[in-house]
Length: 191
Ligand code: GRF
Image 1 (tube, rainbow, N blue to C red):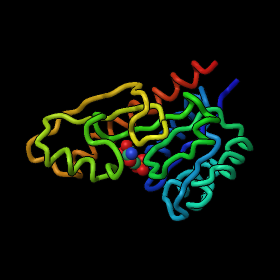
Image 2: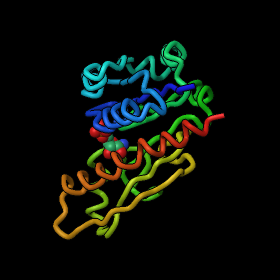
Image 3: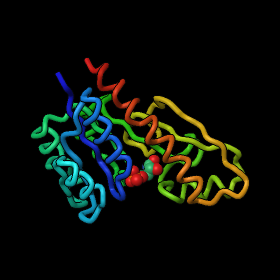
């Protein structure tokens, strides 16, 4: 049985697209739905172009969770992937997907995580701190920002002369390489 994945994204959605393409090619799972909290999120457009249903829910619906949960059920979603999703997931949705919801964070957690640490702000903080390495953390999602159990981390160097853009690009390479593969392993191991 091929499992269905929902990807939640708030912005550009390059990870969402990468994950959709990966599973279209491999066929080991299917992205059946993309959800966003922003109507203008480019992630929705990317999904649309790839023939994946894409739905926007406003802030109130994300706070309540019931309508989102109904959509996840309608599309028979088995596993939920957060990829650049900037809204707290309500507890009714967390409860519906125990150990079936993951997030990716563009730093080596617990460093540079927590509320307000997202997007380029993470890379800016890494550069300001003088760290010589950064990377990605893939972790389960729970009620607290960036504090779910870590599944894996992958590192890259921070190089002299790096800017937010060059570091973000290096991190994205890691994300594109590892996130789909980790999701695939988890989905194939679902009971
Ligand atoms: C990624 O770096 C992800 O780790 C972070 O937000 C970024 C989203 O990029 N949480 P995109 O929307 O997938 O292009």
